[in-house]
Amino acid sequence: MPLKEFTSTIFSGRSSELDVLQRIASQAASGDASSVILSGKRGIGKTELLKHLFNKLFNDQKDTTPFFYTIKTAFTSVNSFSKDYFCNFILQYLAFQGKAPSLINASIYSPEDLRDIANKSGAQWAVDIIDDYLQIREGGDMLKLFSFVISAPYKSYLNTGIPVVVIIDDFHKIRKLSELNSGNESKEIWTLFENSIDFRYTPHILAGLRAELRKMFFEETSIGVRLEILNLEGLSRHDSIELFRYLCEKYALSCEAEFSGFIGLFGGNPFYIKTIVQAARQSVKTITDDNFWEIYIREITEGKIYTYWTSILKAYIRRFDLIKPSLKFFYHLWSNSVDDVLANPSEKISLQREELDNIIELLHRSDTIEMGFSTIELSCDEIFNDVIKGLYYREIQKEPLDRIKDLIAGDRRRCIKLAEAPSFNITIPSTPKAELVAVKSLEHIAQYFNIPLETTGKLQVALVELFSGVHAKNGSSAKSYQVKCSLRENIFSMEVITSQRDFVMTDEDSIHIRSYFDDIRFESIMNGTRIILVKKLKENFAAA
Image 1 (cartoon, one colour):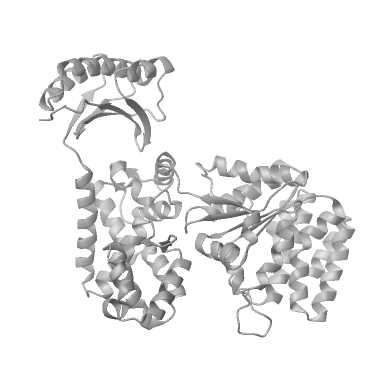
Image 2 (tube, rainbow, N blue to C red):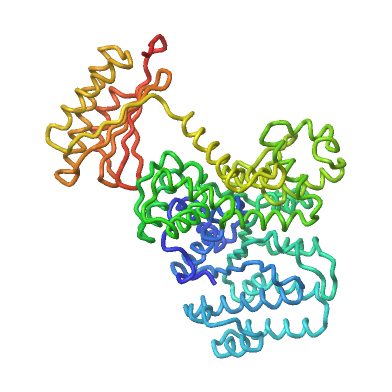
């Protein structure tokens, strides 16, 4: 259950989404709440967000009962799901009303155990509803039983007048439920949730995979048109760095690697960040630019990330003879030749069109490809795409593992090299005269780049202001400052790294500097703060 013992101690970058979901509780109290679909990529943090939401609602308010449930793939029968869902709801309701989280943490109770607890708590409505449940279960009508248990929050409101916020994680997995003693999937049974979802005193927050939920709520039914949609994006660059830094400190790792070289690779995905840091602590004590890529390549070719994605692909592509054609299809996607495959699948990937359409549908449901209205594209997930490249090199091109690692590492390093611009890196000792060294260095760098003298003078004035502010904040704590000047096309940028974390300038200093530079930004990094100054030079500027 999602109480404090089961949630991460670091949770940043999700305050706005948490606020939106928290407001549903207050809206439910006035009978004006709408149910919500919470979607997002795998590993993006949907479950963690819901756990923190449940904690907030359980601990910080008393007007609306929170109920959290995760669809479990172990339960494939309506009977087993119904018992688990119903018992969890009654248990959490009694725990919330009695402010007794230990009830939830103790164990899973049987309906009979819950009846005794409800009776001792004086919750007669719960005693009555448990009796009704036992009677319906005895009758053996599984659809009636399913309909009864999913309406339990609604029935509790009718009896108590207390709204309920129903939070269900991995909702798309409910399609795996089958009738008792039947091997066939019952894909339609979940639609019995419709009335409960629509009731404004029992709003539902339903989380799951984007493609699966879209299919369920919009393509196969029209239930989704009455629901709000909240798509959980990746963490911001700042929050990604904070999470990476926190995990390094937690695992006693130091980091000398340059964040700009790899932080964007994660796409703000907490699962990737945690996995890479955990892999690093198993082999190194300090993360450097070189060993980061060794760790990364190992993870995507044979480590946890590799195992994670290959397991998912196997779960969706169950026919062994379709695995290699699927990899070939991925290859044509990243080489921008998918139109050729669609036009002639038998020649390109040895499949008939019907089989190709089946693969596309399965990959879309697995959230590994993006489908627009008339286009098919790779998922915007660079790490997954590298996993697929490794699989393609191994399974199709029969490359040895060492060669595969070299190929992917080469691709990654080329991307970084292409992103680089001509630059100068300077280390300036932290002294009261540091700005003089910086100003003189800037003069020579500007001459090298052919920056006009008038512009150089203005940049030097701004640099003096910046160093004065930085030194005033740092005092004698900083040993040195790292300065990097670069020029790309007609954009001149200067980066100053200070050891002070979360450094901010006064509004007055910031406004003054902006009068000389076009932009000033502050980024948290492992060992302090990076200050980025940007100046756009005139269009007719001619670089050296």
